[in-house]
Length: 241
Image 1 (cartoon, rainbow, N blue to C red):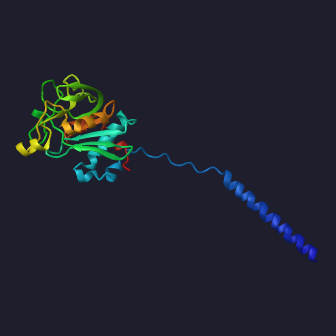
Image 2: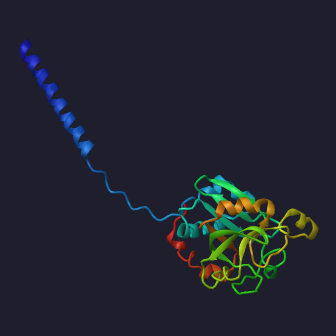
């Protein structure tokens, strides 16, 4: 009788071990259910909150616009430059962001064109000798030494809005009228002939950080531009993070 009981116990152990291991093997080789294809999204949108850019005066919608263009123009470049001309020139309205390192490299003053407006830029042009700023997305090119010292050539990427800036000699450069002293004396920043001019103290660092094909976005809430920009036309295609 004792031998029979031992045989039954042994049989039970063998049975449970074999069925348990078989179940385990089935789990191990089972293929996971196919996941739904993720919707397109705007990368690095979370950088806005991480850098607390709202406290600098930059609206999240403007940052999102800039990311859309960056994604199409130079996603292999970590720097994104935003010139927010919806803000008055007395505000530090240029932002140079390293999206990969998640750092705000520069937040400084930037001038708009003489004929674009006084304190706030309200008029924009793509025409020669207009002395107005041009809206839209740009790609940075090469540096050179000009009358303002180290300067950076720009290529306008939006037909009808800024594709004439290279021929107009619209470049990024330093200027003595783009500083706080000028604001204290006149109540506004000095104005350029259409160039995004920055303080001399920041110009060299900015130019070195953004040269060579990075994305520059000059923004204003201009209805004509926002409706016609090829870089912003697919806004409904993206889902925010």
